[in-house]
Structure formats: structure tokens, C-alpha cells
Length: 284
Image (cartoon, rainbow, N blue to C red; front, side):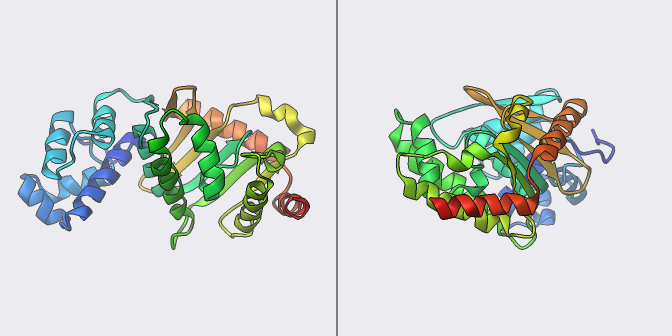
């Protein structure tokens, strides 16, 4: 059934994946639609998140694009099957559906906001820092570490594309001073990377100073990803011990956006944040 030109986050997620699959086969919308037996307009609407797609028809389209069983296929069918409001993704020792969902949303974003109280945001991590963070959680699955690090670094390309999203990361001051892996050189290089990123026009990096640490109790680390048109869609993503939660309920997301505003109000200004970061980098 048509969705009344009112896309949802999950329709956009499905459509984006189908568009990539079509591009992978070097097919135009008209050619793919004709071979699949549907109209060009229908496929275009699905790819733009403006048309819902039934799970059985989605499964057939995934077969058409040769999308085999695995996290991507499971992820898309899950989104087509379950009710709106939120969705969950369990962690796995490979590129999980959670990682695929987050990366897809970031690629389709007009704005990304994130709050991190303990670690440097993934989109700004240098390889050595990312490897240390990922290794801790995957010590029993060492074969997966390189794959996970490479995938995290590949996500960072979203910030260097020709039309990048506006990126507003908030990090607690302690993140800048914590040592990772027992090697001061890693943190020295990481803080310098943050200083480089903070100078980019589309990056508004803010530091929540230790003097306002009471704000850390407002919410656990999370992301707010606002998608490009059509629609004005924002999803909140936060992690629990064994899974990620993708929250798309408008009322709940609005509350998370209000909390982000409160956190931002307690942060140093953009210029003061950069000064502090550069100061810490010089002391490392």
C-alpha cells in the first residue's frame, strides 16, 4: 500500500539498501523494475522510502539482487516485518545488522549528533585507538577484530565526501585525558586527530568540561541521525550490553533531542573546545 508520501526511517533504510544492490548490478531503475515485473515508478518510490514493501515481495527482490542469507538480508526483512517504534540489533562477532543499520543511516544523513562520555566517537577514531577499543570487546574472537576495525574506519568516509552531513559530537573532557592501551602515543595521535576534525566547517566538536559533570547523568551515550529529504526523519541510536536500540518514535526522539540541547548548553563553545583539545594535545 502507498504510504502517502510520508517515509519512515525503516522504509528509508530498506530503500537505500535496495538502491545500492541495484547499483551493484549496474542496472537502471527502469531495467531492474522491468525484469522484476514491477513499474519503474513503484521501484523508485520504494528506493526513496515513499512506498512500503511487503516482506514476501522484499524477499523476492532480494533474491533478484542475489542478496544471500546473512546480516543484511535478515536486517531488511526484520524492518519490513516488525511494527514501527523501535528496533533492536544483537551484537555478533562479525559485521552485525546493528553496524549495517547505523552505517546506512549515517550515509543517508543530513546531520549526525552524538554524545560520548567514555570514548572518542567512532567516526573520529584513529586506527590504533579503534583497534584497542574493539579488541577489548572481542578478545575471545580475535579473527573478527581486523574486519570490525576496517568497517569502523570505512564509516568515516561519510565525513569526507563532497557533501558531508553536519556533524556535532559532544565528548566529555575525561575522554581527552584517558589513556588507551597503556600507550601515550596512541592518545596523543588521537587528540591531534580530534583537533584536525574540529577545524572542519561541517564539524562542530564540543567538549563537556569536567566542571559540568553532573550533566553526564542525563543520558547514556547515543547518536541522533537526521536523514536527508524526503521527510524530516530522525532516529536515536543507543547501546545496551548486548544490543543496539534504534528508536524512531517521534515523541521519544524529540525527548532525546531536547536532552542533546541541554548537553550542548553545558559544553564549551566551539572555539573554547578546540583550544582545550589543542592544549591537551600539546601536553601529551
